[in-house]
Length: 398
Image (tube, rainbow, N blue to C red; front, side, top):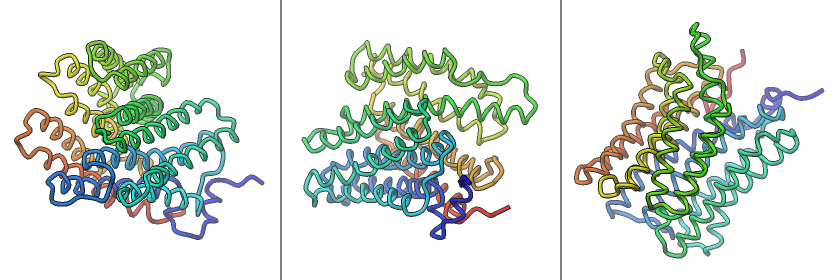
């Protein structure tokens, strides 16, 4: 008789945090996001430095994009892929071993100056390589070919991480290099593909329960595919040529089309439930960042590209992942899909962090960097405190 996911998880007698992929990666990903920020602020002031080959700015960028986001991607995929393929989830010591590789990567990057160059790089890349191998195995075994696109994006994200390392080793400013842009652009396309499925679907489910009739357009229509294709072209232009009018115009076109796509999902009708509207707000930073970056490339004397880039880095990636982590944790823990006051507060803190960081690009003399960091820490430390009990303990049996 075929074994169910629930039966496999119940058979596990070890720590509850290893009963599903989202548990260790969401919890410790949030802890890492909260801890890495004050480390970055201390390094920024010159009060301390890490034994890393990365400069302080490079370490910060890598810690957030490939460290934090890498963990959340793993948690999401290890939870979603069993639903996509109909196969059993990765649990127990296999999951623990994958998580240990993620921890190894964080340590290796932080102390990379004490390691041979290729040892540090290999230690960091071991985690995404192992994750990609697991996902490939599940997709092939489940013959779930439609999700090969997600695996392809994961492979490009891995390549971007390698490129980031190579740029840092060669003495370049990796935080302003092609590796970061490729990683960020790939992450935005993950939001476009995966978010384009779940945002209208989750919104539709909630609106049906509310008795609404003006429902979101179903996901992945022809228009959506055109928008994604144009977004790939625009982001590719930005990766290979991050300056110039042509790239700026391409990003403006992407931004306008992504706004049109988002409006089709009826997010303006979801204000009564933060767990739903936050998905639209998180996705909204994708077109907002594209429009701002396009303007920055056309008029760099008015808008700084490095400043508006955080609309994507902190806004789209930060808020979208926080939204998905809260929703997935509630759903898989058997809790009501409703955002309480604490959850709404951490969403607000993350938005405040993005706005403060954006303002710092225009008024750098004010302590806005520190204010943004404080809101960021509050958002992720708040998630760890609120959702830690759900992630660290076994689900109660009904």
